Amino acid sequence: MTRQELFDQILQKRSFLCVGLDSDVNKIPGHLRREEDPILVFNKRVIDATVDTAVAYKPNIAFYESLGPQGWNTLAKTLEYIPKEHFTIADAKRGDIGNTSKMYAKAFFEQMDFDAITIAPYMGEDSVTPFLSFADKWAILLALTSNKGAMDFQNLQIGESELFEQVLIKSREWGSADQLMYVVGATRGEMFAQIRKHAPDHFLLVPGVGAQGGDLGTVCKHGMNSQCGLLVNSSRGIIYAGEGEQFDESVKKAALDLQADMDRMLDQYLR
Picture 1 (cartoon, rainbow, N blue to C red):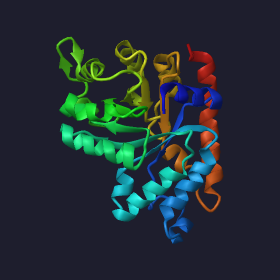
Picture 2: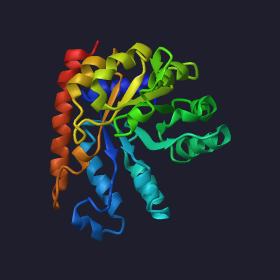
Picture 3: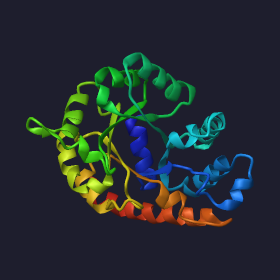
Picture 4: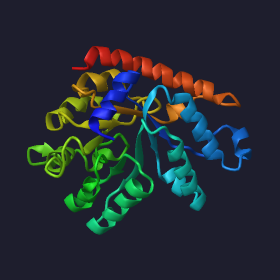
């Protein structure tokens, strides 16, 4: 998917919502566990409930590969079920030496046809550039995350900048804003202005709104650009919003509530 196609979807739906499909068989409604493929049935109902409000879906690959061959099959069927106009992200956090990264890229871009993949850039340029050789595909680099241990490394001072800033500065030499996105946690909302100094035009994938407590208004105030430039992800806050046989009604309401907030943010901050 191109940058313009993604922006068109944002404008059309008045939303920059990414639904994280971190689907755990131990957390889905109990009645679904009687299904032959409970995660697939759950995912389909979540997708049906959010298809009009979401512009992107992000399966967390660990939740599928932990189930072995059946999990990979479920992932493939889930991806096939997502409408083609939606942006799809493999939250795989890959990143290895060049020839290995090339195989990861072929797996997620050719075999499974995801639009994007998350990448840990610690091993540098040759671990990232194989993902940039595919037309209209995206590498989403971890920059400033919201997990407990993020500050162990990401905020280390390197000369006049912090390590996460070096990731932004250096990686811009490898690819353009039409190829690269960055992960920036919503719980670090005060840092978005600093992020935008180094990556003014790039899209940012923003986890942490909802269950993790990130503030959408702060993210948008400091992070939105002329093409929105944000994909705000919600996983637990949406997919586990409801219980029982009609759980998807609560899923739909949670997505609609967040989309309504996004609509207001677009009116207020889209420049």
